[in-house]
Length: 352
View: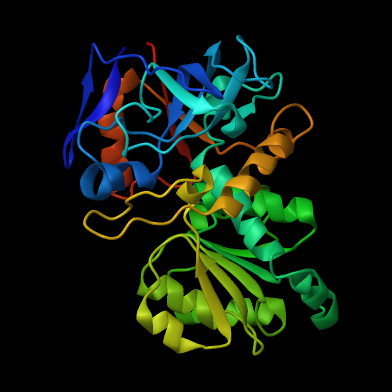
């Protein structure tokens, strides 16, 4: 098969003649139709990936064969989801075939295009983890909304990102109002995914004042999608006097922790849902396996898939279907690397 492989750091190439992954117990072999790009892809290529690993996380495709013990999926099923690309020779999605545990693959709702289905990977599953993080606060977020009579109580910093758009949609389905930050050209898009109010983040002080005004004192929960001292500063200061929980996808600056002790900051990393220990940063200790994350994800996949699951009720990211197949991926990675992609998902059809 052909696959997009990390030849050396900062250099990925499409290689022919790669072995089709062999099925293990409980796995399915997927013939990949479309793949979607994420910032984590170029970061693995440039910084944290392993040489000779297949890159890519998001995919949609068709089950080609099933391994021993597979009971839920069958040959011919259309599936989508996320794999841990950039760390293993035959696990990434940027390839003509991939293998994945059936527990982690979601059946595509009938009528959904394979290009749209490819967007339900890193962004969608991470947004679900954010929702889970809020749920672990008990019912405090919903209770405090009623108690404090807040109009918008959850902040999404980076509302036009993939995770941001999916989070806004999931929050709307939970009945939780939200306020998001974005550039003005993305305001309408972000509102269409569920934001009740959108604030221009470029002027941080003005944005904080607007958030406090709109919410009647500040938010009680939030997600920071972008990273960087300025965005953390905005997010932490957007909380009300009683604080709350801020979930982040990026490294937490020391200054953010010190800024307001009443705001608890918790980082999540999607790859823990696969249930194994792995090296994330080269030369650093392996991250431990987290069995409860895996158990949660297996149950989430069951609830999310198919015609009645969250995939069917949660709008796909806006798709920018690109030309070039696997060979075109380098161009897409460059666009992400240069921060030139906003409010859309770069998707490639594997076979041109």
